[in-house]
Amino acid sequence: MIYCKLDIRDINKVDFSEVSEDSPETVRKSLDEKLFIVKYDSDSIPGFILDGSVIALQFLTHKEALALMATDAWSENEDIR
Image 1 (tube, rainbow, N blue to C red):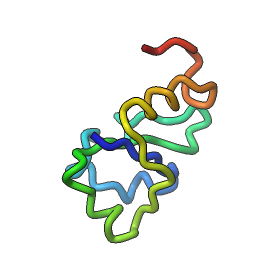
Image 2: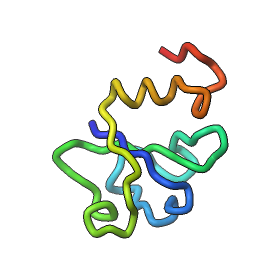
Image 3: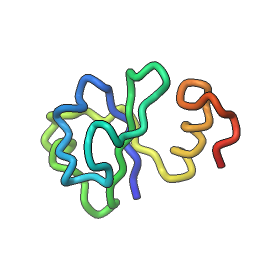
Image 4: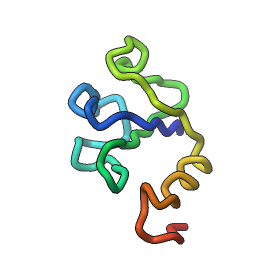
């Protein structure tokens, strides 16, 4: 799986049939709700990223995504393992 950090202003441009999440309500958002994460199979990059309609801010592995989720910007609980 690939995890992708995106700007919340792009959430309505995401085709949720191309990612693991079902809707804007099921994505993981940063505490300030300015960013969100989607995940998808590494062999199937979503069209909205490929065509540039949504610009990925960062691509992450599972391990990197867990580390990001453990930061103060994403979690009030320091130990989310």
